[in-house]
Length: 441
Ligand code: NDP
Ligand code: HSE
Image 1 (cartoon, protein in one colour):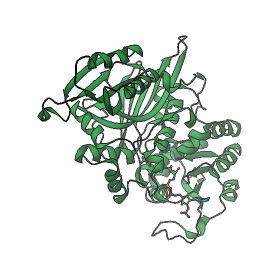
Image 2 (tube, rainbow, N blue to C red):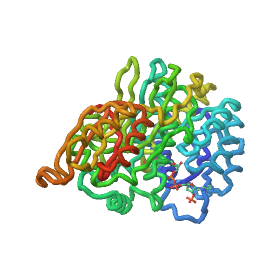
Image 3 (cartoon, rainbow, N blue to C red):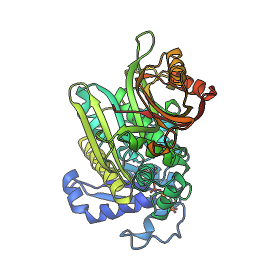
Image 4 (cartoon, rainbow, N blue to C red):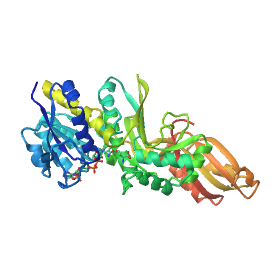
């Protein structure tokens, strides 16, 4: 048998411990697939004394000296499942420059400074794989960076954060408010003790940057992504969506477009949006992830599965380990980063969206015309208007009315300015809900 491929595992928490378990349980199959056995050279952790249960691994392999482990001559592949920007960036740059291959699940680092990693990989000649960084177990990045390289991707729309999808699905199913649904997600172990990265959209924004970079052959970083979380989505918003035959999801949307001069651009955004129940993403419930890719020749493609969890994420990590190990044995490396298109990222104000706006207005002649005038002034076309008595049909004719307006597609800045002006009108008692609408209605 060929000499083993030696792995340095950085991190042995939720994901790392499952990587160890799968490496142990599937060692014969993995060796047969690669053409050489995989061996763990060492495991870097923060706390040597931590109880790691019945992990099938020699305790002598654990170390707190990650850098020392990476620098060892007998390490071929570095698997990073620690997370965060530093020291992970320094470790991986060191490994890649030294010609080692790297497998990482670290979306935060890739979105913050993927360029340093790609440049170091090009310098050292090793592979940089990161399938687990977006949508956990779902094979998504390899299809984008390999299978679809003969096509032109126009748009990627995804639910890429399991925690927020669990919360919004619970709000939709039970009518609960955000705080109540978050509490349930925390009790069930979906949400972390500090849920900020998930509920404020940072996690999804990092994934959106990675997806956009691959889909559009352009370096897109977390700072390029417009981000809004779900903390302000109310039970009333969810009820309003339901009344329109829709549901609310936290979407990541990366799309091609053109600027005012007709030059090709991309827009990348993360925000809650209403989508019709007939949209393929509407039925993605619980903590599942799904990504809808629209390509020129292939047409629509849907990727669905578990976006988090130890074993599902370890599956993606091991798939990458097999790929980079095979490459090393064959003396080749995969295609390097493809960023040749270098498209400018359009500001959010120029992104084309639709809005669903619920207003509580005075119920008297001329109100509808005044409201419509605001839309017209901002060059926003109204698609549908629905009016009923305030408080619903049972309330009968009173002094106020509920007005629900759905717009055609318009630049986000024009829609936002419309809402701002509506809020200032004395005939508008309140703007009850403002939500973007995606996926037709
Ligand atoms: P955990 O917090 O469970 O594990 C982190 C591991 O890193 C622990 O073993 C910890 O050591 C070790 N560690 C932390 N700091 C250091 C340090 N300075 N030096 C050496 N070791 C260190 O994280 P997860 O397993 O959940 O996540 C790992 C990565 O995978 C992250 O990038 C995350 O974003 C990504 N990911 C996670 C998913 C999930 O479902 N959990 C899904 C998709 C991606 P110790 O054990 O001693 O504390
Ligand atoms: N916190 C993330 C989620 C884990 O909820 O999807 C996977 O990145």
